[in-house]
Length: 499
Image (cartoon, rainbow, N blue to C red; front, side, top):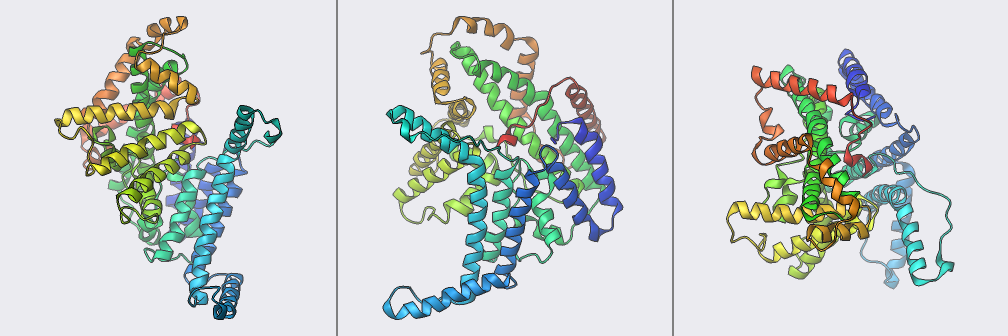
């Protein structure tokens, strides 16, 4: 089920809100959990099994971290301590490790390894097989070819809820949050439908107090409706038309230089309004349920360096990678060389997190190199001496180059597209007719509107802080228009559903 569908807007959401507010407070988390599982299993009920497995393991690991874990975990930690005491005289192990500390380390290791194993298998199995077979064909060694009939389907949202669930055990182990006793409360946190499928990645420490107690008000509900309406409008009225331009450009092969720049810029608008629109809807749905989720976008195309871009784009992921990967790797504490390696490694892994393809690896590596270069220059771009508008323009151009790898079907297609952008690729004969479709008035109007809102419009987060009658009329008008146009469009899930 997707937010941009009539089934969700006019059936699931009204029923969910009615049930949620009709029940007493103690029953709301159970109802919200069950409804979220219905939402998640709408396309494939088997996906629910994975979600429940990850949830159960992390819940038990959280109890173990709090000293209330399963007896088998304590016994295993105790056996490790006995083995340590016997081995210590002959110098096989280091200093004494109390059973409690062993249990905590085992709990964190079990949580992280299980979630990464689930994510690794379902997201990268097909990629691994295809890579091995490609290398075998390139080397001319057919005996290395893997004849695997199994093809794995990627469960929706697995990249998001595994990261979110892992943050719970890590936060509890670090003392940043207390473990939950109630399985229902924890299952509600992991499976909450507003952010389950495509984020934002909500850390447990950010909502722990809200799970225990939160307020519900007309003001929150009104702001939530505004977030939902504006998010849907971003998706339907801006992202989808710009996506049509991008699809035409990237599917055409070699095209003209102007068409290539038009297409990749349209894709930049598409992915921004698509993903920020989903985040707005998720935040709005959370507000209607009493939750306040953190901001996920902060006008990223206003950035004047790639470093600043990653402070503004997909904030929940970039901060997660910083706190749970970059800092544990050593961050910037081990000297410049190690810092640059850490930045590159984190962005490479961030690229792989987005998709199981070499194009995403290159995309992540490209950003990693740019971040390392900027860090060597004190955190600013190499064009830091230029006026602010030029710094913003050059940063946006670098981001456009990176989006080519993010959108292209493979590395060959990405190379062809980049050559088209540079005027080094002769347009195909069929591409000469492309302009008549790409540059039609409706496409140009949508593109111009997206550009104006990107660089001159207010952010949803700030614009909805104080709602007036005029704003309410505008919100309802945009909601009605988006719903009307939605009726004429085919199935159009949000881009980040595939990640």
